[in-house]
Image 1 (tube, rainbow, N blue to C red):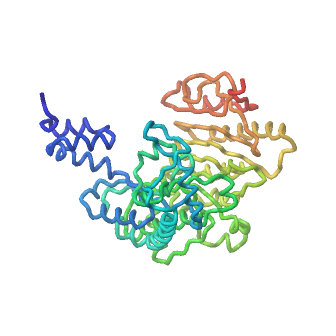
Image 2: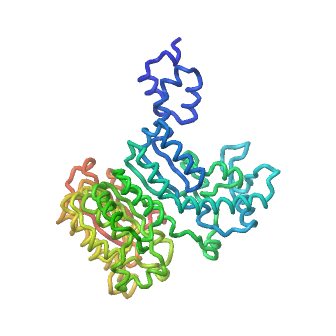
Image 3: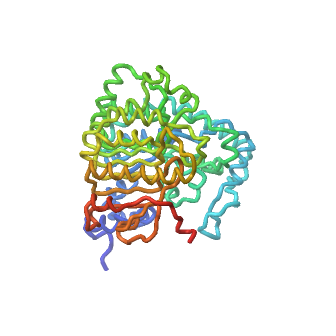
Length: 482
């Protein structure tokens, strides 16, 4: 019988390619020959994509891997801007509540169950855990303050780095996610053991969010600015920059020296992929139309310089559909600004979701991308106008007409290879979509109105123009109600 150690390295690596990390580690422990032959496979598996929290432990890991031979395998770096969901003023009672409400796996089952407390060692009283929390907050704030310097020293040491971005845990529902469990976040392992809950995924109930708002809502924007400047000043060229998992406060003023500004401009002009999740500061947004707001340098105005060379752009808007129309903080001014200042020369893939647009702003934003655009996604888009419909029926009929006009605009001005449109509204009235040719996945016909339509040239027997001419907008009928 042939042993694993006697197999050629290429065959052994091919066998181990799709293994889970635990299985790969187990095989590598069978003998020294296997460990040596799978060393590269192991390094790629563990260090190709790294996620780092802004803690001393996280920074130390980043510095260690940056000086290790495995640094050549790092291709993606994701930074988690926040800790404790931005709640830096908890009491000892809050820490105890986190431990009690946090779900864990029980010894008898692999199921994650709510109500089984994740108890730390009995000798750690709540007072000590609270002190640990306070030290963690202080450490997080200090590490955040020195982050740019850390990035400037580490980023140039990763020769294969091509993607950077901000990462956010999945919040309350993240504690149930198997994806979250598989994703290794560096920088919180010791803290998690000491506290008895995950500091990146605290369970904060809705009423607590309203009465005790996080104090670090701006951290995502600050970290993105530090990352952007660090990349530019160290001449590290990456292809992709992603901030679509952490809300970026687009109306926050960014302060750069003239030298930094020039370096950032040069960096952005080589960027190929950009993803943004847009937010507004309520206080600053109140005077967003003022002359001072229009002339100040913001993160959004900086990213406008990347538009001409981008091949892929994703924009979405934070939490728009979680509130009623009367409570929404409108980003109309900023989206209108984007439509006027984001000019594309190479854009082939455009994804827009969870955004409110005027019809004119949407058409203007798409305008310069039309000659080169081949893939377009419009999902959870609400179109608005200055004239508010008098009734729900008026909103429905006007919305059907307006969305049909958008499709005609696309038909006459571009030739798409793929197009997905879904969950569209007009003045927050849902508009149904009827696609007589394709179903949601591009193959099975739909015989009733749904909220999705998708075209893929590779799966279709008709052209984009022929397909979009047959797409119709009607009163939405929820299939689950039939």
